[in-house]
Image 1 (tube, helix red, strand yellow):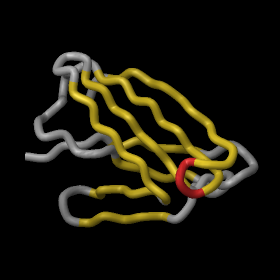
Image 2: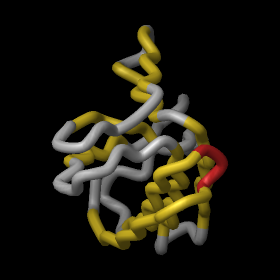
Image 3: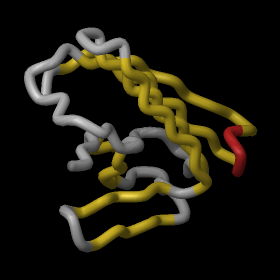
Image 4: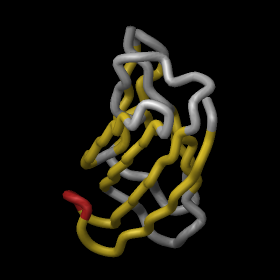
Length: 102
């Protein structure tokens, strides 16, 4: 099977973000799933994939990580999410790190 993590992003700034990188690390298996994209892709279930060009100022969207080849449920995961105002992760960038257990 294929599994991924979804992140709900809320833009409280006054600028739009156009590119993203997400690095998710599974502490139990030492597995890393890395994704770098222009735009924001949501793998909505197993059928539909939606991509938005930007996370606009004041907007909210869901973005999906790269896939895991196993079910990471119950494992301790860490994610580093970087949003940038220009394509190819350039311009002004914002980075946040979180820990979670799916």
